[in-house]
Image (cartoon, rainbow, N blue to C red):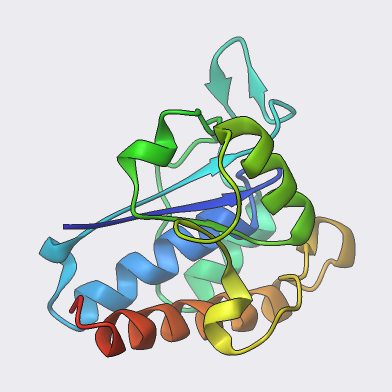
Length: 158
């Protein structure tokens, strides 16, 4: 079982987009049973009294444009124990990586990665909360997820 946790600031845009894009990809490839895929936040801004907000409507709409459902997903907070639970903790940008390191007590490297590294770039995945460009973020997420699957195959994990 390959366990992947995508992480962004609020867990309402980028990381759930990545979670559901990768779930769709592995299902299409017939390898879904080899994966556990989830997403989390580094901030409690979208979590009130222990209940997370649902995926931000424009992010949800962008996924739906591509036939991908994220129904039922609510924001959850990254826990230090997630480092031991998951094989890959994948942040969307450099600030996410710093927060992930602080929250888990581990540094970037073996398990902590930035998404677009898998697409051959050190760039941050654009935050559509600020840009409003959910289509651009979707394309970046797809490139990162495709790169992750290619990496797993090259490493002999698939």
